[in-house]
Amino acid sequence: MPKINVYLPDDLADAVREAGLPVSAICQRALEQAVGRVSAIRRIVLDVREPVDLAAQLPNFTPRAVATLTLAIDRARTAGAATVTTADLLHGILAEGTNLAVQVLTAMEIDPTAIVVPSGAEDGRPAANALELTVTEATTMGHNYVGCEHLLIALAAEPDGLAGQVLRDAGADARSTRRAVSAAVAGYAHLRATTKEPANLLQVALAPIVQRIEALEARIS
Image (cartoon, rainbow, N blue to C red; front, side):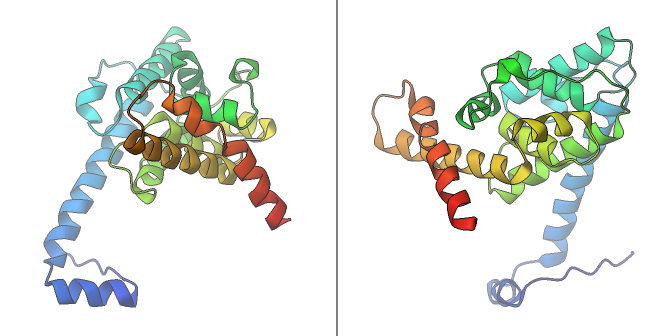
């Protein structure tokens, strides 16, 4: 059986040894899941001609994220394309309209209705990279789900796609978008835990994001 070395920070390695965790089994399972996710993403993005059950293929994606991908695939098929592009993914976010990514853009003082989805030539590789990065963003942020907010960060970070160029030109670069998403999710979680009335929690949570970003940017500069 081939061997793959895994390097860990000293403190994590000590904790793993102390806990007596079966490292090989855990890594094997994690890699199996990662390969499965990446393979599913590539099948979905790189060939839209075949029907696919997105919810079954991507079980960790939220219903709004699945709806967004469905809209992206529909746009690609309508255009007669064989693959989904980052422009299709951006269209899906904006067309779905009720997801956190749209709310975050608004909080960043970017009008989602003013964003023009690009229509230039683009292959499916940047979109596949963006979707893989979407899962990575969710995992890095400690979330057990994949939502449109993670896709927004990924599109802003992906260097080659047309959607990323549009978002960065509008002021949504990867760093500021990630910061805005983190603030929104943290604020919403706090309000949900401390507020009995759930209505308008998202709007309340998003309200201070712009001020936080401005304060951070002021300190950095």
